Length: 160
Image (cartoon, rainbow, N blue to C red; front, side):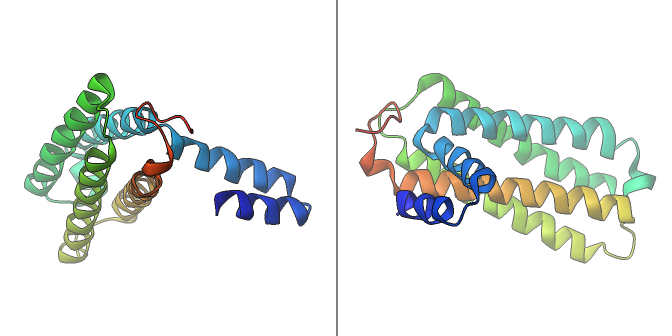
């Protein structure tokens, strides 16, 4: 399926887009890289929540206790993904599905908090949290795609 999509893009004389699309999908064949990207991203998210959003609460508008509640699962998910990266499980599918679902739940909770506190959240806060949600959803989608296609790859994430 992916090869067909890339071929269609190439046939339509869109080399830059096809190259970006192809590179984007390449990461799905490397589950350990996905765990690393997810772990570092979640760690960065948690650090930004604690070190930037929390102290500058007036600029973002999210109540401090909510920011703390969002940072806790971000740290936990970072730990989970980084441990998966380090141990490189032979059957990575359930680990990818778990982290993808956890990421989606995190985004749903963040979206609910945006709606719940929409009266106090500033435009900068909206931009920050929507940006975070879009990045996390993209990573979760790649993780689900990698889990779906994992029966076509070996335990180290390389294609047969």
